[in-house]
Length: 267
Image 1 (spheres, rainbow, N blue to C red):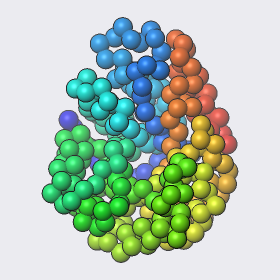
Image 2: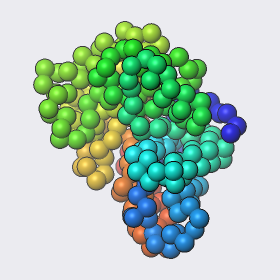
Image 3: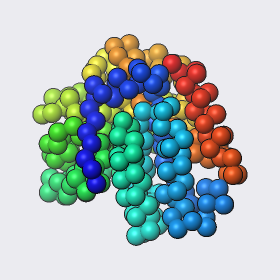
Image 4: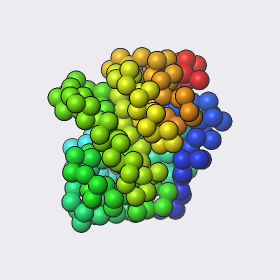
């Protein structure tokens, strides 16, 4: 695979030039893609490829949720590798995210980092920070590679641990003191947009990855207003409402319309 690198400065420039914050989420479920694709040798890869080719000029990032591929064993893993290889080779201006939610003791994290940063050449990976600094530092050793910490997620279960006693603020504040913290990004759900201003005051230069717009019902305008006071360093991830906008032969037209509507409202 040919190696490409993407950094925060380039990513922010792409956001400004393309006039979009959009990250396309490829949470691809083979049972939900258009039926006419199922006759191909690799329906999931072909579906992903067609979406990225059609939408690449209107998005700045792609997030691949690895669970949807791992669940299909070696066939799913093959689709994942082919998808990231194709994106990096044919659309190198797109920032790529492995939504894998890894992190473990040091030597295990080292292997995860090699898998996603060296073998598959993702630009970034989502991590659960619960095990602390030494579970994350292996991912921060790579040049132009980024670790995305789960901070305040969009799901209801965030109320169990993240919100009580503002634990999410402890995660963000403490991680800002780690070596290479300039390579950190943070997941903050749009359904928790009231907290974004406080988070942004701590993380002025770090990118935020924001899910929860679309199917989960987050407020787009409030989310953008509360997170872009200092810069344009946010990525808004949308998956299901784009990739499953239609399941007929004209699915790409439907997906593109959702993207166009989003970009018109957001920038």
